[in-house]
Length: 188
Image (cartoon, rainbow, N blue to C red):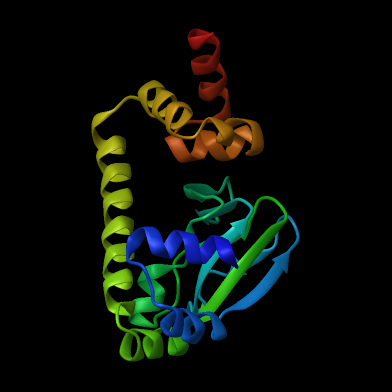
């Protein structure tokens, strides 16, 4: 649990009483590889911190899934749009490795926002960060080639390429696995 405290303190340090209140609401969950955290059509009720693991966000399709996000150690994961609106999710979330999460329910999260000194500040800064990540992803898809997106991914997260199946990486950068293979050959 110290990872989440350290992470939150980099955003906006919590005093001990606020931390005690917040941490009392957290539930540790250990998950196996390929566990579904949220199914399409279900409402998101949790914000989770990834203590260990890799998680994929995707839209299941008959021909092949459309992967649009990966999350790693020391990052938050949620279907944020579903959490905010309490409407069914249009995508799924699954673990790609054995994963340890610290979860807080939406109800408890709202209580943290109301009863702590800087819960709202942390929430706002996390929402701003999620927006920036989403914006960067959208701009990349609109303005960069598949090869440039692959190189960006490799430079941003080199560990990704060793731990995630290439079919998911291909989907993430918007190409077929065969096209990704050609990109990788050109680069090497």
